[in-house]
Image (cartoon, rainbow, N blue to C red; front, side, top):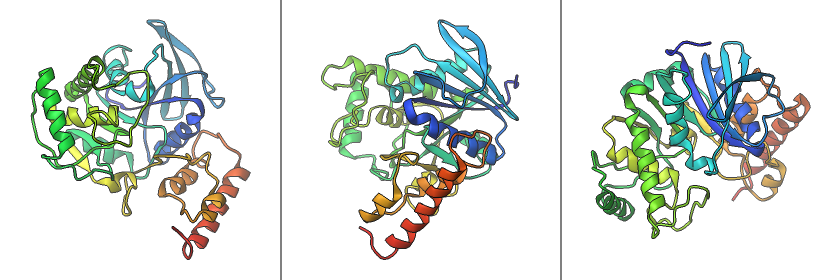
Length: 320
C-alpha cells in the first residue's frame, strides 16, 4: 500500500461514465502519476476492473486493483445523493473515514483527461485550494446580482465572507492539502443549508442544472463550490478557463462538459450539423488507447480518430 504522502486522486461515476474514468486514469499514468485513485460508484464495477475485495467499512465495500505505480480503490457507495452533490462528502470521507491517511486529494470528474506532468498538480496545491474558472460567468464580479444573492444567503445562514471574488469556478475539479480540509466542510455546510431552505428548491438526490441563472443554486454543487471559495480561510489558486480547454491555449486538462460525451459521440453526424470536434474529444481519444486500461478495441479507436480528422477538414470550411 502507498504511504500517506502519496498523491491521491478521486472521482465519482455510475453507468457508462466508466469509459470516461478509464480515460482519466490512462491520462494520469501517461503523465507520470504515481499514487492512489479512489473511485466512488453506484451500480456495477466496470467490466475492465480486475481486482478483489479489499475491506468493508460501514457497509460500503472497497475493492482493490493494483496497476503498476497506481493503486485503484473502488468504493461502492450507500447513498441516495446524486453523485454531483456528493463530492464534498466523498472527499471528506477519504480524508477522515476510510483510514487511507491522505495528505492531499484531487477530485476530477470522470469526463476529464489531464494533459501536463503530474508534478504540476502537486506544486499547484502548495498555493491553496486548486480550482479552474468556468467559461460561462467566469468574470462574475464582486457585485454580480447572483453573488449578491449568495451574500444574503450567507447572512441568513451565518456564513462569514472571507474574500470577494471576480471569477466563477467550474465544479469538475478541485485539489487541496489536508491542511485545507476546512474548505470541504464549508462546501458541505453550504449545500446542507441550501437543502434545508424550502424556498431554494435544492434537493440532494436530484441533478437540476437550471438554464435560469438567477437562482442561488441553479448550478447546484458548482454554486456551492463557488460560495465555499468566498467563505473559506484557505487560499484559492485559480487557473483560467483554458485550464479545462474551454478556450484555446490550455495545457493542463481537458473537460468534456455537456453531451454527447466523447465515448458516445458520432463526429460525422456532428460534421453534417456543422459542429467541430471539441478539444476534449480529441484528447480523450488520444489517451484512451495508450494507457494500462484497455476499455475499447483498437479498431474503434482508429475509426474515431479518422472521423475526427474528417470532421476537422470539413468544418474548416463549413461550420456553425
